[in-house]
Length: 70
Image (cartoon, rainbow, N blue to C red):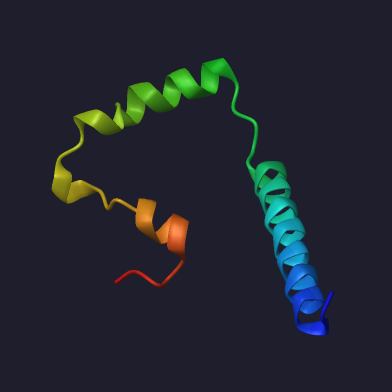
């Protein structure tokens, strides 16, 4: 295996591990919400499907691609 191929393999492996660890950290930082708390939130704020389009921003592309939205 050439040095460049080995470097690329190591780099991709490190990226994959960092991605997995970032996901685990994100999950650990999300606070637990009981059923009662969730019900109260739903009553206070309603469902996102009830919101007007102007009240929300679709962040799907940003989450998938970071700040590299075209």
